Amino acid sequence: MKDDDKKSEKNSSADNVDEYLQTLGNEDAREQRYYSQEQPFSADEMTRLVNEERLNELLAQSDAFLSSLNGEIRDFDESDINSTK
Image 1 (cartoon, helix red, strand yellow):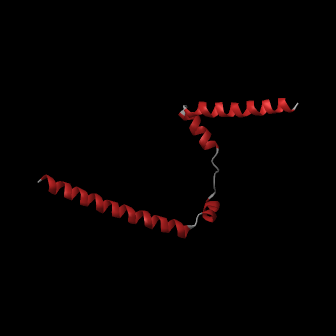
Image 2 (cartoon, one colour):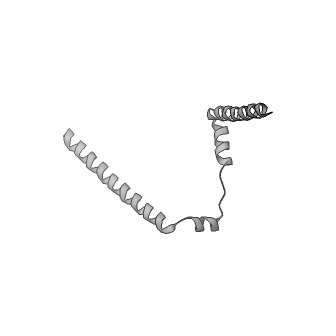
Image 3 (cartoon, helix red, strand yellow):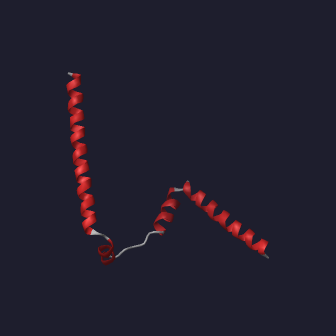
């Protein structure tokens, strides 16, 4: 009886892997599989879960990074223009 149980477990695992591999090539199935695992959050839950102070710190860091990056791009563009003259 134990051998039969092991076979059915292996078949079940193999079936799951096969199903997953088939969805990899199918965008719609993959997207549906992804979204079926999502958990909807209410506004109250989001307020409770999100650390607003940390979020604001991260946004400030990303703004500073993008500003710095824009400056580097401008400097690169100016040096590129000057080198072609």
